[in-house]
Length: 398
Image (cartoon, rainbow, N blue to C red; front, side, top):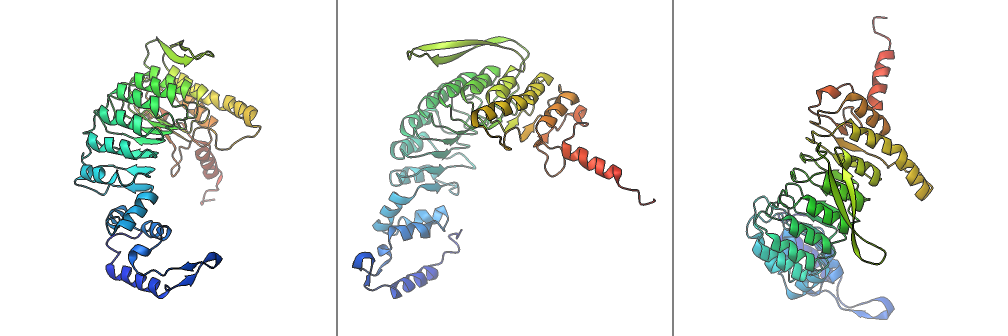
């Protein structure tokens, strides 16, 4: 990518002179006469978009102000934009650009220090209706008004990052889930108020295409919310629940799942739950689960590990029956059970044996068990094989 520091005026002028040398009046397809490029504004939109694809986003903003022709071309053709480089006045910049770049599909507004306010997000919702990817991480100043605006203005969102947005409430997130039903990737890390069981129940009920969810350090999430996800979002591939200390609490309770019957009437399905049942529900309902983060979920017990291990055989059978073909990509590839001190070696070893892509060996290390001193005996197949190879090598003294 060519940055603004490397894109000198002399380089642009040299390129322009070469274009003019090739200009004049030529013959295009079908014998039509083609006007030569006499000024920068005469560059075809397709060529301009190819040029700006080689420079950074800050330069793109500058280019859009060169002339009206270039501005119009970028307004119609620009689909991806990142403003994370803007350390000051990002809010005003968004207010200025959102009415122009109405065809945006991806907008990255990640911040080191909070700048965005609700009026900027409302402007995005009012003009950028094709938006599919939006990153608002660390937007501490935003309130529920932003989520309500996005719910109405950007219903095609498939990827949303609101990690660190601590002011959002669970009712606003639940409202958003009711409109943005195409969500596939959702990052709620650190959203302590927004990520509650109520919000997760709404997500499970409305966002059936969800594939990745980050609930890191969302302390109000319990088994009730996770079970709603397991039943409502069967395509989940990645789920991070690190720091969700209420997961698999030892208490028992009852959960109600909303549903529509064959006549379109609202109803509820009741189910009882107890400790470890949320992980068990994930093992049974989410056949495509690849990555699971349970760091500091200290209530996790062997029952959850054995359920995940046993699900490997069941999932293979289900996938075979539905597709008549096996896939080497099925099964857990990453598992973090650090600080889950209630687990025992036999249960974790059974899980490791069931999923060959879980590695304890150095360099691959996808089964993370930091702080679990009782699990030092757990090894993947690679580590066992390497140990056997070393053991069978003849000693130099012989």
